[in-house]
Amino acid sequence: MGGDSVIQIKTPFDGGKTHSLIAIMHEARDWNATPVVIVGTTLEGKTRLWEFIEKQLTGKIELLKDPTSPGKNKLRELLGQHQPLVILIDELLEYITKAAGVKVGESTIANQTFAFI
Image (tube, rainbow, N blue to C red; front, side, top):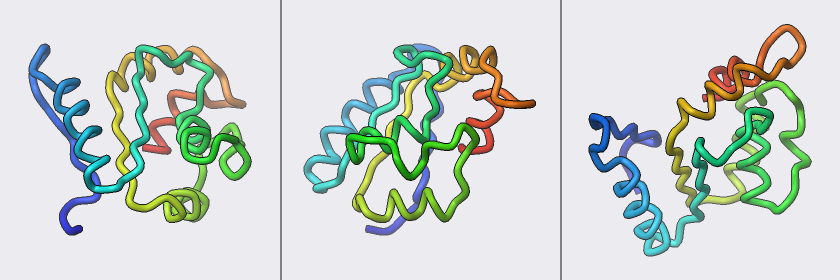
């Protein structure tokens, strides 16, 4: 499969982003791709996206258990083992807002998430 590895859907409020993501999730099954689904409205601020992704893919958190954003080598190792893969993220801003209140050393989970993204 070719094309961009990251696609961002931009539409105005109530413009159908969630419905588009649901359609992509169903299509991912036809592609034999593993879907990872992240919905920011359901996550707590203390959740770390990299751990959340690893848990969905493997059922456990071992490789990405550091409280700070993982480097690309660890992330590539995890994601490379689960190809093809589709990661769907909805309502990220709501999650980031909650994560801004959770400290990680001198940083916050929100700042670590920006580094991760």
